[in-house]
Image 1 (tube, rainbow, N blue to C red):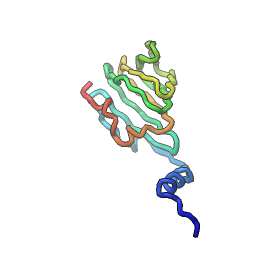
Image 2: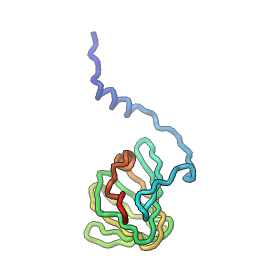
Image 3: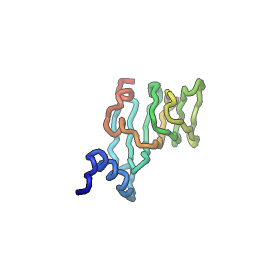
Image 4: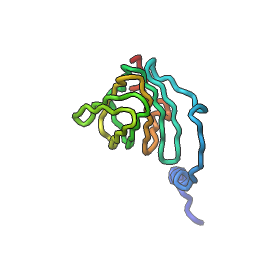
Amino acid sequence: MPKRKSTAKKSIARKISRKAQLQHIPWNSIAIEDLNPLLQRQFIVGQNIMVARVLLKKGCIVPEHSHHNEQLTYIVEGALKFWIDGQEIVVNAGEVLTIPPHMPHKAEALEDTVDLDVFNPPRADWINKTDQYLRHEK
């Protein structure tokens, strides 16, 4: 009689073998999530990547945090000031910042800002809504 795979191994095998799906999604079809009075977001998750549209009002602070995900931040409108790797970096509309995994960073919206963030792998804390560092009053 052949040995049976463990439940955990079966689950991993299913996830690896799952075929990525083609998606075409207009942003206006995604609900805007209010995280606090100055911060909103929408996101779309693929198989191994996630893109988020983040809306920050002037003065919004994203507290210092880090994560195992690689992050690419593209500013569509406005400007964000980052405190990262011992530096202060202002990223303006049309500019991109790449943030390696595990690098602590903080940001402030210098004006009303629309930001597209790309993460690999997808942010489980965002998907599961366990990102309490973003869910505060300012």
